[in-house]
Amino acid sequence: MSYRGIRLALAGPRRRLETPIGAVTLLLGFDAPIRISRAGRPPADLVSLYNGLTTTPALGEHSGRFAGVEVLLAPWAAFALFGTPQYELTNRSVDPDELPHLLGRGVGELAAALGSLPGWAERFGLLDDVLSRRMRAGGVASERVARAWSALRRSGGAMPVPRLADEVGWSVRQLENRFREQIGLGPKAAGRVLRLQRARRMLAQGRSQAETAALCGFYDQAHLSGEFKAMTGYAPGEFMAARAASAASPATADRVSGAATSLVLGANGRSAVFSKTGRGGVVQADRTAV
Image (cartoon, rainbow, N blue to C red; front, side, top):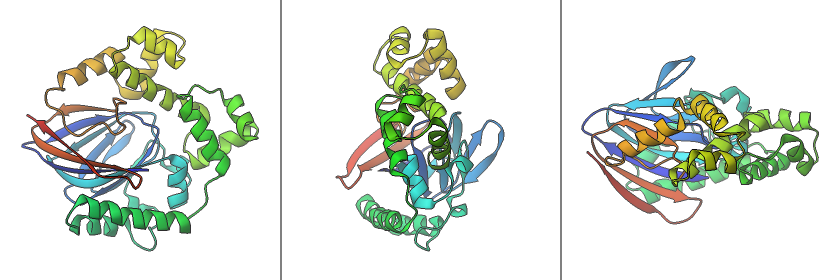
């Protein structure tokens, strides 16, 4: 679990493409709404939102003003937190108040409480308290699902499904059913997301597409390109070139550090980002966008 506090006060509207990542997002907003657009679904204007795992990109747009805390969760932890079958939330952005409340408190109420606090340390402290108590009081995720998810992540999405099932002592069918319930995607689809996340990280480090394809287990460079375009809307070279073009005016950090998760499509002004992982210290990073 990790937290990221965001406060934006930009000179104009912001458009940001978000690509699939191997985490569930709970965004607790306490300012203006964000409009989320995703292929096949009508746009949604949300102050706070919950994103299950996704296999397609989403476009986030706002007026240039935004404040909130983003919580990234392992999918099985999100299942334990809310108890909602994760397949119901795949490729969706929903108002988290539609989900079971956190210890009797709606997410909108929690977000308002966070916004009323004087600083990020206090907000992260409240989240630690609320989420840890909810995890203790909420549903129980399968220990075998958590183990399988960890093994799939360590392999960068490359572990074959039959081997993954053997690792946790289930049949392939059992693994697929429990993954859909507690992860949101079947193990093969989840592996695609994790494999592409690893590929984006390698490309951001300067590796060639051919080398990246070989190291990440794609059949060839064409396979990498097809998967990249299906899940981001861009060919690999186009995506990395667009990131390089906007590097002189960065906005907030990538949602997963170093993984090239996002593409800013237009920005003005100044942003500030504060991050915390687990119960560790708070790190402040200021970035200026022109």
